[in-house]
Amino acid sequence: MNLKGRDFLKLLDFTPEEILYLLDLAAQLKEKKKKGIAVDTLRGKNVALIFEKTSTRTRCAFEVAAHDLGLGTTYLDPSGSQIGKKESIADTARVLSGMFEGIEYRGYGQEIVEELARYSSVPVWNGLTNEFHPTQMLADLLTIREQFGYLKGIRLTYMGDARYNMGNSLMVACAKMGMHFTACTAAKYFPNEVLTAQCRKIAAETGGSVTLTEDVKSGTRGADVIYTDVWVSMGEPDQVWEERIRDLSPYQVNADVMKNAGENAVFMHCLPAFHDLKTKIGAEMGERFGIREMEVTDEVFESSQSRVFEEAENRMHTIKAVMAATI
Ligand code: CP
Ligand code: NVA
Image 1 (cartoon, rainbow, N blue to C red):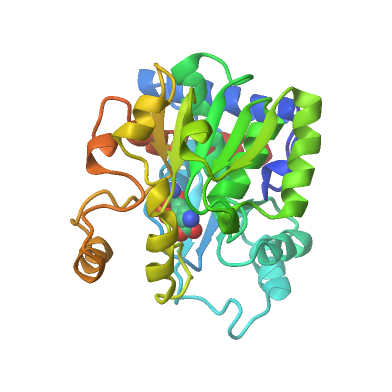
Image 2: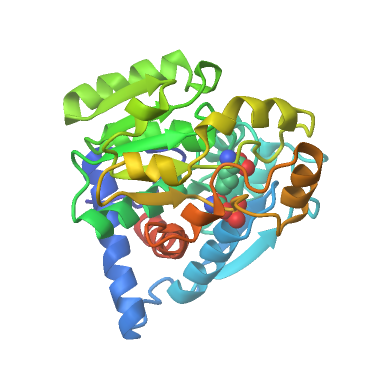
């Protein structure tokens, strides 16, 4: 398997074998890191990390993984560069290609990261767009495989806003790996028809499936993984909170949902999560709408079924694999 020079923009661009290769490489790198064995084979090279939206996990994962690999890093924050304001994506891509061996980009539309990759002569990695979050997918697949020992046949139910980056990406990831994906949410939050049809076609070849349902009981019954994400994503206007809380509250992950899921079910979330009032936005929504938690209850978040922090750690090992494989 040779992924040198490849961009990592969305899982749709990768075969199941290539995805497995990246997962295996991540698992190896994780084991080496735990044993204190250094893998700094990319010393002397450098990567640019562009963030047009904020981040804790993705930024830290890229920086730590890069440092472990011996790579130098330059972080460009949401306000600290010329990108899009004074300089086009095409020009930025060609400037950065002359200085760096890889470019990470987190931002808005998927077409922006695709354009960056088109004009860049070095690999471009998608650190989240409105449509896709592919590095998160590798971490999630690794976490699921660590939990169950395999991926094919796993039943994953996603609750909440399934038409955005996380719902889209999980549907693609499940279809690619022969898993059974269910979006369990109000119909207006189902993934779009074109992507759903594309994923159903992929799933037909891999032995997976794609189900869209509004029914919580049937949608979560027997699931191996219950997954959710924030109800309002970065870049969305503040005004949508009220409607989202109203529409998506019936799809909150709570103890009843987990009880209805499989006996060995785990809870996953890309994070950050609103599971209590200990955040600025959480407290504000608590005050405005009289709620204590949103997409997941604190009980489930803190339960022994929750794998969210293992998942977060795996961001680093899997991002390291993407950089090691493509540079
Ligand atoms: N899950 C995730 O991408 O987290 P950050 O926004 O903190 O990077
Ligand atoms: N849907 C969320 C994911 C954060 C990792 C967002 O885009 O804000």
